Length: 82
Image (cartoon, rainbow, N blue to C red):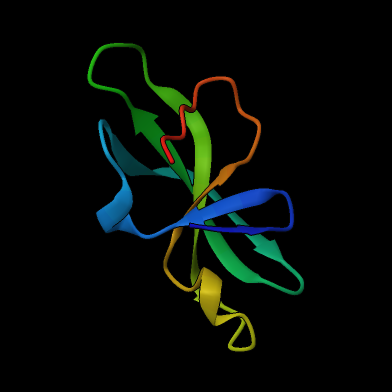
């Protein structure tokens, strides 16, 4: 997990419980690249729309965000186990 610019970037193999699926909202960050929003479906609860994002055309100068799921660091629906 990497904290960067208000988000936590997580490799998919470290995600536990629930699934992320591609949402319908694309976006562009001028210095990080083109991203797609991700909807989160927990094992027991409603779908959280646009909870996270993933950079599909990332900035080559930021390899630590390449193809990682990113979530806001202080979202109430998240539980981080260290």
